[in-house]
Amino acid sequence: MKNIILCGFMGCGKSTIGRKLSAKTEKEFVDMDRYIEAKAGLTVSDIFEKYGEGKFRELEYEACKELSEKSDLIIAAGGGTLTFQQNIDILSKTGRIVYIDVKYEMLCERLKRDTRRPLLQVENRNEVIKELLEKRRPIYERAASVYVDGNFTSTRVADIVLGILHQ
Image (cartoon, rainbow, N blue to C red; front, side):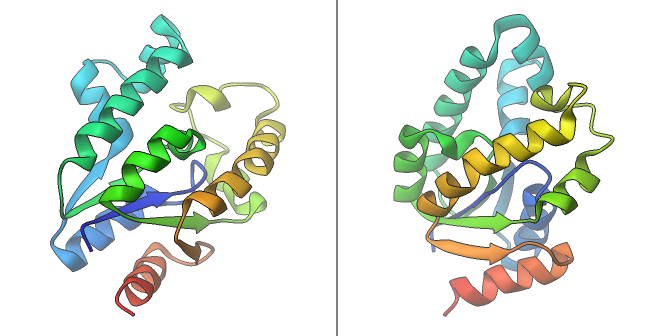
């Protein structure tokens, strides 16, 4: 295994699971949103606010290209990263894409107090989650070579991921 790329809806646990996988495998963990923030010198919210989603997606694409040139990484891709085929193409060449699927109700619970994700700073948050999830779930399923039920503790999900990848 070169890299492990975790994908799934925001709030599915990619970052938490990624850190646990990193500790278990000694691979470096990279949260793609934090990576973009460090390079841009701005938060994701600030990038969206100042330059719009289009600029953020350009930075995200650049991050995919840069990270795909490295190996032995655990990458937590942003929730929208793999909704773009160019990102899927780049990342799938460098490792295995793992889709962490979490039920709608659990996502709503996990995201109910979120203040940092720009797409959720709306009055009808649960409706937005439902619409985006319905749109993105089939894309995640097509992009990933591994499917994992993420409705367990992060430790359990990390163990499941490792078990599948080492078969």
